[in-house]
Image 1 (cartoon, one colour):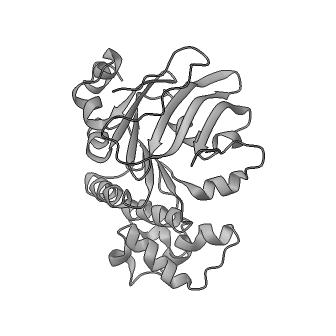
Image 2 (cartoon, rainbow, N blue to C red; image 1 turned 30 degrees about the horizontal axis):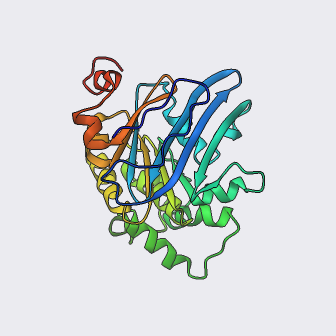
Length: 274
């Protein structure tokens, strides 16, 4: 069963039933989510689930709203001047846009890894890992234990355990991206958003990030934006195809890539446009 978004401004709610093979409950849900930059409508009433401890890939051509969508999932969209949203984003069934919800707390629970690695270049590897905690006013009792734990989760420990005092900027691009993932994980998020995390990496580094995503899904709900159809097919359990700000189709990844129900999805994944 595929879930399609209506093109009407305010579509009726989509059934909460997930595709039949889903083994986990929803962790998050966008419900009639629209987003603007000033007067420009970037997302059109998106309704879709994000399944707990699964990987959801968001695909589509440039400018279709993929990055805007995931920035709405942790309230980063609203920090842009003139940006606004309508509709709901639910985390464990509760709206993250409710008046009494602290957006800083949301961003701790729903972490973000950006397209380009952004470690603090002059800061040591150890201090990079702990930077998010310290900026949040958290002082772990055993910082070295925390650093080792999350570096292991990010599959980086064996490569940097003897160089924790080296500047983070001295690492390779792929290592820097995994360092940024470790920094995100140190905050103990429940959901990890990744906005094209491999776009600036070579094939070897990309393979390591993809292996890491496979491992992390055992603990975290992951959403990855990617332009690579091959990557989406390799790493995702569910895939959503966006086009011109609309959710065209959402389903299990193998359905999207082998028998999509919307001709626009088939045209995109077969390279007819995009």
